[in-house]
Amino acid sequence: MVAAVESLPPIHPDHLVNSLRLAVSAGTRGLNGVPSLLRQVLETRAWAERELRDTGEVVRFRSVAEFVRAAPPNGLGSDLRMMERLIRDDAELTVMFARACAAPPLVLADDKSEVCDPAPAEAEPPRDNVPGSSRGNSRVHALDRLEKERPDLYGQVKAEEISAHQAMQQAGFRKRPDGRARLKAAWNAATETERSEFEDWLRTDEAKQPPRAKRPGRRRSEAA
Image (cartoon, rainbow, N blue to C red; front, side, top):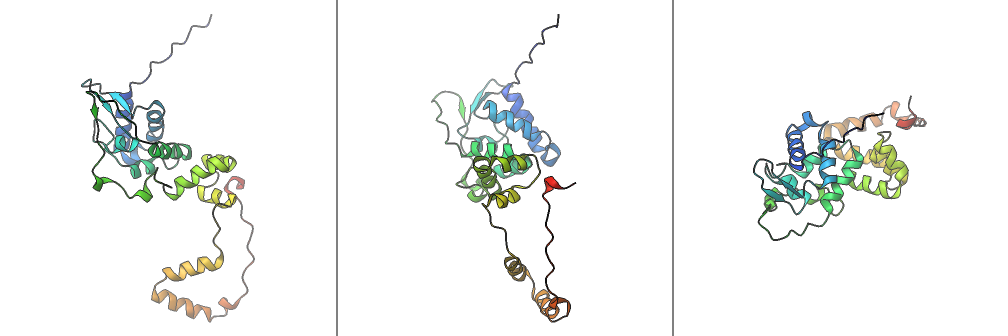
C-alpha cells in the first residue's frame, strides 16, 4: 500500500508577508523571491487582514496601495513603482498587481483592530506612473489589453517570446513609427553640432545613394 502523503500546513499570513517584505527590501538581490511571494499574498488576501504573530494584533488595510506603503511590521514599507519594477518580468503578475491596486477600497468594520491609514499625500507617486490609475503606465495598459483582446499574443509575451510593445504592434493597437517619424525624432534630439555634421553628410556621395532594401526581420520566437 502507498502511504498517504500528509498535506503541508498553510503558511501563516504574517510569515508570508514578512518573507515578502524581506525580499522587497533586498531590492534586485531578492528579485527571484518577490514574484512568487507577492502572488501568494494577493491570492490569499494576506494583504487585507492578518494577525501579527509577535503581538497577536490584527491589522487590516483598505487597499493594496496602503499595505505596500505602510511601515513594517504592518506593511511592506515600499512603494508601487518599486513593486512594479521587481515583478516586471512576470507579465501575468504585473496585470494581477495592477488590477488589485485598481480595486475599490475595502469597507472595514468598526472594531478594535488597527486600521492603517493611507500614506501622506506627499508620499503618493504620480498617478500616471501608478498601476491601477485610470490607465496605469503604458506597459501595464498594454498587458491588460492584450490579455483581454489578444490572448494569443499575450501568451507569447508571458513566454518571453516577444515584448509587450511588439505584441501591441502586431495586434494593430500601436502604430509602427515610419522612417520619417524616426528621422524627425532623431533630429529633434540632436545637438547643434550633430545637426551641422549631419547636414554636411547630406552633401556627400554616400548620402545620395538610393535607400537599401529592407531585409525581412524575424520574430524572436522564430530565431534559432
